[in-house]
Length: 441
Image (cartoon, rainbow, N blue to C red):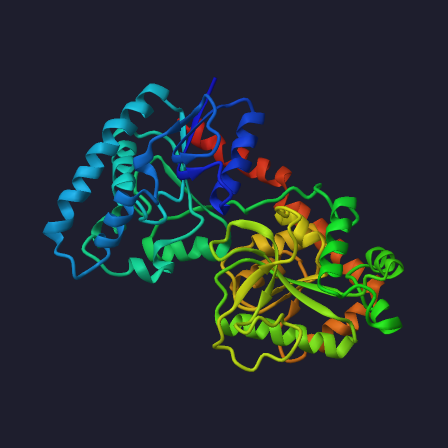
């Protein structure tokens, strides 16, 4: 049986890298591969899961070294002994484990993308160069996207190992923008494999989501308000709109996905929600689906520094924003939060497709700032609403045309299923591993 080892800082967690890795792992399992996990932290480890704490990116020893490495005020001669010492400790355990597993293929998640644990990346890169083992290096992120990694004494190591130039390494990027950027920065090519979702998961009519939406609206005092005009404009599709109107659920829920949004971006979103409420006569609520560390979290509403929910004017973009849980109903599934919302807003150019694809899979309209990634998605045929000076008027008109919006969302759903479903991911992985595991002679 072909053995595949997935290796990362952390696996089986709730972070985006772990979530994407698990999709790949399930596919490899279904294809009959014998899969091992190797990481510094693995939630609920099973028999084929191997934990080496020194591989973590949040171990105190690792974090302290990572800070020093990119601090130009620290003398290089003071940093190097710690780097070598940790590398020796990692090599003792990691190389021994890899030799015992003897994998036919290694899938590396972000270890060659971000220098969060530089000794780990060096040890693994050198082992791959020596063994000439087939390796898929999956890049969810790049170190040059982060200011904290732009200075320091070890730029040559970043150039050599992020990603490594070993012949057996195949790089994977999640979109054409990242693909082109990797080549322009490093001269290394990559294969594009989109982040994919289960397009057959629960939709907006799922009873559990209907109950959560009702609880959300009643908790915030939005249900039953707005009169006939409100009822005619609630919801993003004809069936959902009519059923919610019959129950008196007249609020519009606008979802701002968890992310590193700037103060200006959040203020822009709040102003959009305020204007939408004024334009439609429909009470509007701005919510988020995650906390500041991007961990999945119960659905939250966004508040300004004074504790006022975003249903009024926002005049000071410099205020501090915070989140407040809507209820104590427990954790909300990320897809469920999308399904119970009426639309998704992206107030700034985004580097990740996942929020957009989640909206597409849940048949929700996306209001977004244009950028290279959105242009790429539009190139596939997906349709979005541009967040500009006319956005509120455009959205309000669309909400009055349920059949038109339903047609657009259904078309988006079918295009999304074609390119971003788990079936599509399986096909892309098969195309990727065929030449890696069976190289041409």
